[in-house]
Length: 355
Image 1 (cartoon, one colour):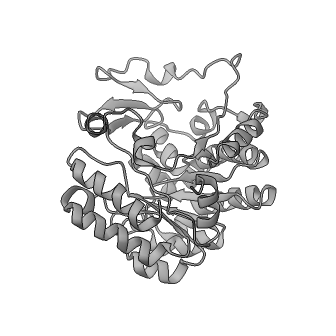
Image 2: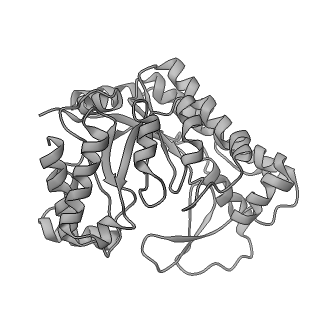
């Protein structure tokens, strides 16, 4: 059988692959029921999902942990609140996998507070282990990948959603400062992965809603795209064969062309409820790989198994016969998705995709 690595290389080079790669992910309750359904904890192995191997970034053990406690002194937070690696409070929402965020810089009153906020500087970290991880992945026929991080999403979680959006208009230096600090973190990690020979650099931000961008194109271009584009150019200068994958939910039609021109190889998740996938493929199909395309707001939860099979076949016939397609539901599958639809998705991927 064609390995994941060979299928990935052919797919993203727009050559007919030996098989179409596919995968899915699940909310905890649905995952539990899938495990019961198939009788195994190894869901990916049972269903034949492609499984990129994640490279690791190791924070030095002797590096003192960042101290975010001053930002929460005197705060009363709900029981079950946890804190992420950026000091953001994650409050249980009681709704599946979703969290409520409480932002440590939501009450900031000066640029200095943004400048002084504790963030790791990985510039002196040791990434020498990555080359061995890439070699091990390749020996197993697997794709070596690094998730380098968000930028806009992390920024608003630290600053506060409304506060950050207002910053982009009223205090652009504040937004620039936080974005640039996060960009430099991402850049260091991405450069290390490219130097180690990684096959895939994965990044992203949800910059669109169901209908349009969250900001004006000019704001997106100046604050966000300029930084990702610089990162993509840098890693491709180091390793021309590396592929760039970018995630954004929503209708990103207005900016796809600029991202492709800047070096984007793979767009995820290509939501059919939000954009015209046929038109997007007509314009960019020879240059862009679609990763997703199976609706989690429509086909997977509310369609029949026959509907799921039909959508998989349609996507492969339209977008994947000459490469350029990785199939997946466009987000994590929620509890209302029938088990029969998951089986139908996999069976159709195998039948029509050569797997």
